[in-house]
Length: 237
Length: 347
Ligand SMILES: Nc1ncnc2c1ncn2[C@@H]1O[C@H](COP(=O)(O)OP(=O)(O)O)[C@@H](O)[C@H]1O
Ligand SMILES: [Mg+2]
Image (cartoon, rainbow over all chains, first blue to last red; front, side, top):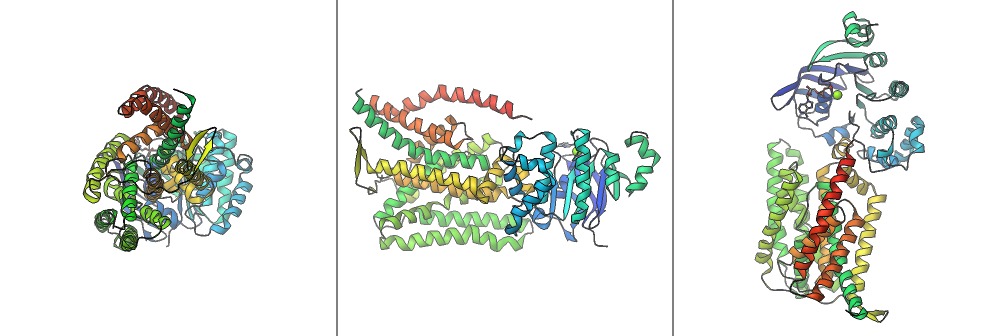
């Protein structure tokens, strides 16, 4: 099978501390895959390693290409894009410029303005604030900008690290609705979440990461019905 | 001090300040993109003046050999790093950037020098000869320590400045130079005569800063440079390579420094080590401006120029002492102000 992204026995360490151990997972084209797990499980660490921001051992492939020694910027050019947990927006630059820079890695400069228009269609609030500095946005708007900026890169694989982190429930719903709507664009999504219920509702496949290792995996509908998981992560309902 | 004298000193100060401002703007640009306080931009200004003087005399400038040596060194380091990382296929690109482009620029200057081309061509040649130096030094000196703390980078930059002074003596010799004036006209405002050179200096400073402003606000490359200085990780995640942004910043900063060298050379005698005071005053101007603001750096540099001019009237031998000691309280105030700024920036 030709996976979009596949990780085999990936381990990531901070000095002597191994934060992620022997993780294997794969994302098929057009799939939404979620990784759930408690705070400190190593989810962010794994995503940073997948993007090349942290060194790791094991094998990673993107569309069959070995990512060994491939720098972050090259991975972006290949079609991977990460919306990091900390968003990493250009705070002193305008919303419009943030979006424009999202398309930096693209060769098709001609359609960039149309795509900014698409992002504004998807996130009308960003249109109102297009001239405002990104640093002046609210938490929800920042997440929308981070998502919009990533979409501007026209990725084939979008990695989202806790897109609902720190947002009000109403906005969380909106963000998940938007993520689900990306399915129609044919983008594969790797979604990291602590909000396990919403993540499993959105995704096709789920993995559970605990203290750096995958403890469970399967179709997200099955995971959502798992008694052990319900007790641990899904609020016991 | 009469009004007449004050006016003359002010004109002088503005003209010096505009020269420092060019270097200061480059310093701020480079610092914001790479976190390196590149003190040696002053040396590059001096090298440009020395190169132009050699070209004026129809001689091949020492810069040609200097660039050739630096290019060979930078390419060897890059090739070694690439081979060790198993990236053999990136070798041709590295050869283009580090060997071919600087080599061709140096060769053109070397060949054209004895032909004694007209002045505008000589100005261009001088800039072409000096511009590759900083990007090559970046590869040789700063790339291996790219993640070092700001203070260590500053210390390395200061050490590099001393190395460049040594290289300056080696490649240009100990003689001071003064190049031909670029204009001979003058104009009179409120009874004060302003030389054409001063007008040229101020106009050039304004034009170049305006150009830079347009480039930063309206071009994708300019915005990418701002993105790197705003958020390095965010920029990398959008496919913007900080090292490449750094190289562009080095080139822009070198052009600014080179132009300032061209502008100052007809007014002041320039020696191989004259870059130190230019660089230091630009550095101080940049710090007065808060290190992150281009207009701030330009105004800070202008202030240093004025201070210097009035200090030289009081005591010409002590002018630099006066300038730098007056700056101590200002720098203390700035460092306190910037501390507060950093606290505010935390999220
Ligand atoms: N920069 C770092 N240096 C050292 N340890 C870190 C660093 N970042 C995270 N860790 C540790 O790695 C583990 C996994 O963290 P993280 O990947 O952020 O988890 P998650 O995203 O699942 O909450 C935690 O124990 C955390 O303390
Ligand atoms: Mg995390």
